[in-house]
Image (cartoon, rainbow, N blue to C red; front, side, top):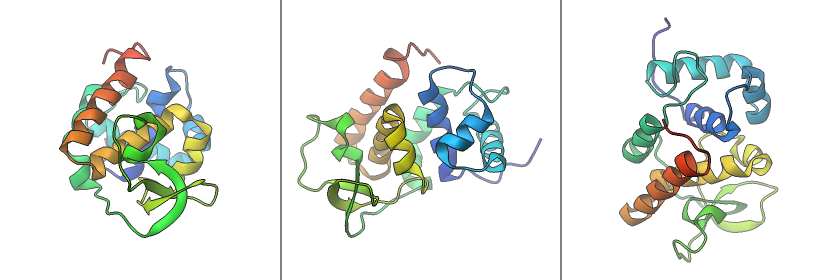
Length: 177
C-alpha cells in the first residue's frame, strides 16, 4: 500500500462526485472526464481517500458519515479560504441556490468564472475545474457549495449546511452509510 502524504482539495471534489453519481457502476475514466482531472490523479486521490477511511477498499463506496465528520470539523483547518476581491462568477456557500431562503446576506460569495452570471466576493474553489463540473452536474454543485459553508461559514450557517448535506446524502438518494 502506498504511503499517505495528506489529503488534497481535489480529493473532496472526487468523493463528492462519486456521491453525485448515485450508483456504483462508474469508472475511473468517468471521474477523469467529468472533473477534468487526469487518470493518475484520480487514482492517487482514491488511494489517499481509502487510506484516510473516507472510501471503502473497492474505492467505489464513500463512507458518507466519515466524510461529513471531516467536512464539519476539519476542512476549514485543512483547506481554509478567505474572501477575495469582487468578481463575476458562480454563486457558492450561503449564496448558492441550494441555500436559497435559508440564509439572507448582502455579501454573496462566488467562484470566479468567466461564464458566471453573479457578482460577489470571490473564494477559491477546492479545484480549478469546480465551476465547469458544477455547471454540468447540479447535484455536485449543491454539495460543493455546501462544503464552502464549512470552509467559510459561521456556526449557524454550518448547522444549516450539516442538516442540508445530511438530507442530500441520506434522504434524496436513499443512502445509508
